[in-house]
Length: 92
Image (cartoon, rainbow, N blue to C red; front, side):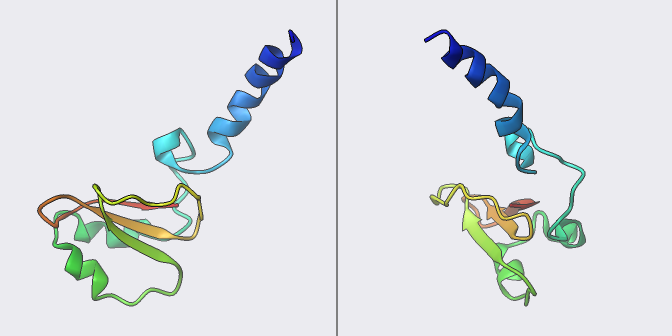
């Protein structure tokens, strides 16, 4: 029983930084999906992102919409608010 807390404590850094999701404490410097090139869309209607063609996987979703928690480093995510404006663009 004493090994479980020790094992869990040793795995925490691995779990926290295993993916590059900045929302989970991952590597914020890695732009593995090219999100930076779409920064000009922040504050724009989500239809602007929907009108674009992407080479890789993409998700465009509302902040009130449930989405899977899987992390795909080359997927670009556009998250928009209740008014339909893009508020966050990130990889994952």
